[in-house]
Length: 313
Image (tube, rainbow, N blue to C red; front, side, top):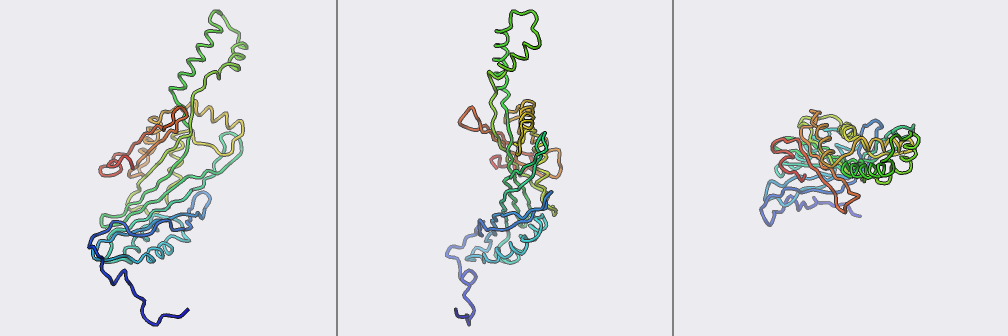
């Protein structure tokens, strides 16, 4: 391989665009990157990054994508993921495309592992939460957003009421003429017949997007967001489960029967109670066991011009 003796051609810089039009998004998608998150147990996570700038100078043919790639490595690799780090990355991306771009953006996608205790037993296990970070920087300022999806269980209140009615009718049929029924006989009947009708439950999903303040610089509060949501729902899916844990989970589902509307309201109230979330978008999906389709509810904080302008997210 020979070493070039002259300056290499720079076509992106030195040739003009055939159509003098601006472009909103130019960059790279799916860049592999190890991220460091300082949770209860610090992790190095495999992630995928999308990074882009716009082309505001309409006559400019293209950008130098290697500059985005190198900025990504310099600013995010080998240090904890923070709001300050993302701001510095986008500042660098714009500085390296001065005179060409006015806006820069980053999206990071990864699975966040969190260790969870069993409900009753002493066991523990890992749950992986699909998560994303979105950052945008431009003349209007900096915007930082965290997204996470968490699974939970939902028992249908209507199905539960219908099941109770059938059990009550069966009990009346078998004991309707009795003046007094021994406790032992009632207990035996319940053991044999209390499950003659059962309410339907389903695994459900909550998709949460929260916007942080534009001067947020700290470590990204994914665990705080997950904990608030799971505390509100009460029926987060479990990891390691013994029989005592499964019984406790059944009790939680019985105590927290939810339509999708109920789940969305619980999450909305929990997020409204925390001023850290400048705006939020919640979408809950109950993946029906009765129907071949899902039941959906969406709510937002209601910030003018924020997520309320696009309920579909």
